[in-house]
View 1 (cartoon, rainbow, N blue to C red):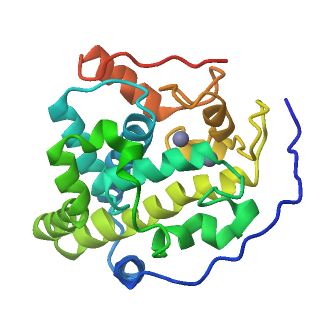
View 2: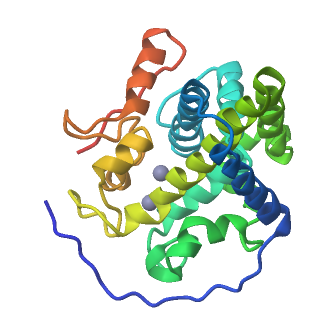
View 3: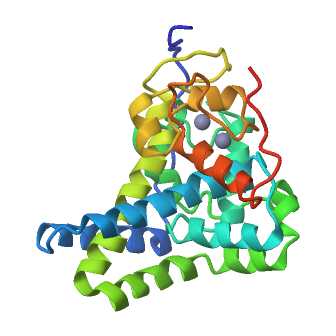
Amino acid sequence: MQEPGIQAKSMQPRPNKYHYGSVIPFGLIHLGALGGLVVPFAGWWLAASYAVRMFGITGGYHRYFSHRSFKLGRAAQFVLAVIAQSSGQKGVLWWAALHRDHHRHADEAADIHSPWRSGFWWSHAGWVLSNEHDHYDPRKIADFSKFPELRWLDRHHWVPTTLLAAATFAFGGATGLVWGYLVPTVLLYHCTFAINSIAHLFGTRRFDTGDESRNNWWLALVTFGEGWHNNHHHSMASARQGYRWWEIDITYGVLKLLSWMRIARDLRPFRA
Ligand SMILES: [Zn+2]
Ligand SMILES: [Zn+2]
């Protein structure tokens, strides 16, 4: 186990050029989630909406589209992209292309969301809301941008999340909207974003990865395995991010299940 190697890195103040097309919906969803203070708690709405979409983010945006750590058929790939985008974290091609950039330059000057370079807020949410990273280089995600249905979904990234909001309201009224959409969407934002901010600042380092990635058991629980972020930076193409048996990785458990059902194939092993 290597101790956290905290080094002084040059900070790069970012211009505060926020994209209001991102800031306004982000703010409104946060405001709407305050409805949880008045609408009676509905645990099943919250748990189901959080769990399915967290898997969409970790199994979809991250392990499948960014890292190709397992294989899927074309229909299953599309369904996973729709589930991922129902979290409201922009388009699948945008997400994966920029995440590949993060690994290419982790915690170096060119990293788009290093807390060591641009501060906590920027690494957590600022970079998502800014117009600095609105666009991605399609060549960095050519393996998936060749599919027209994924290009369409990426261009209309607000469609799945808006449909989910409408469906939760249609089936559950205010309870459905608040506990089945607004509150879990906010939780999904901040738990996902914590991997870019907290998991590059606090935690332990098993592998000398040359960046500041850390392992956090509590983040791993709420992000279904993504908190083993130092493990992931070490073996980024692995379908599994928990390394020891006790490093709980719910996403990997679901992927194993999907492979037994012959939906997912060729889960790539951890390279120690
Ligand atoms: Zn990272
Ligand atoms: Zn990654």
